[in-house]
Length: 159
Image (cartoon, rainbow, N blue to C red; front, side):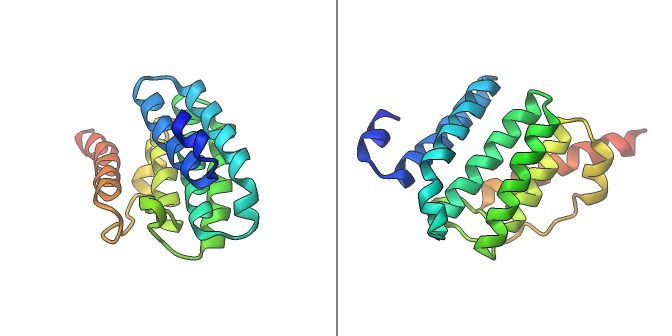
């Protein structure tokens, strides 16, 4: 993070923050992940105002990762607000893109919304809305979605 900060490039810092949120989430440090996401988002805002597609994508992904952190902390209002912000950025971007290897766009927002609902134990929402075509998404994202969708479907089938 220090090297990214010293680069004085808000996109590099945002990319490092995105990676940092993944690491913090993996270690159960949800509050720290949320704080890191919010800090990076504030630094990236000037590039987003200029409609830089890379900045839109990185900021969108930061909001999505922060939404997951909020959901894992069982904070539905914060998670929903962050998802809504990411959705606005995806709408501004206009389509699914892969700037800076983000795979960000409307489909990734839908996939994260399902993941958040699953973390918030809203299984019926995931089962009802989980059939999303993710074939064009980066492999990690499409596989994660299929696993997230399969878990509640399998649980429902067993009942």
